[in-house]
Image 1 (cartoon, rainbow, N blue to C red):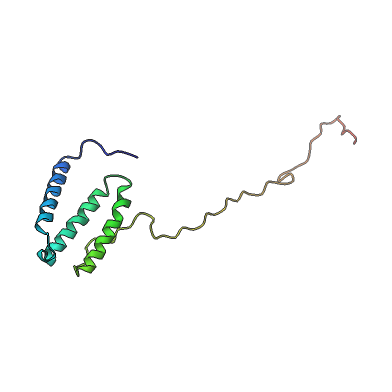
Image 2 (image 1 turned 45 degrees about the horizontal axis):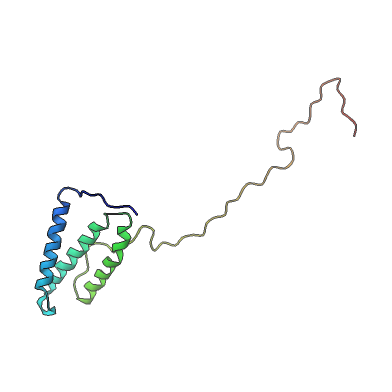
Length: 132
């Protein structure tokens, strides 16, 4: 498995740390279901979606790993009667496409006979063909 680099892009580590701190503060504030409004829930879902999309570019396997989360967030929007996301439904490359069975490799028939342009054997004068 490929490991991530030890240093992040400029500003990324600081923003990720601030995001984690804000998420912890949000968790502490929103301890009860009644503390959420529709706009606050929509903002939180959108923040998670954007973070998941950004995290999906961290590693080649990350896009496939965050895809179920993005689909669950789409269902959560429906459950909470929130407006749909303005981003298209995420799909993996090649997902949902039917794969045609492989076409067998056919080799041309091997040549038989002497082929076009055959002019026969040339026997030099004075030489005889051996009898069979």
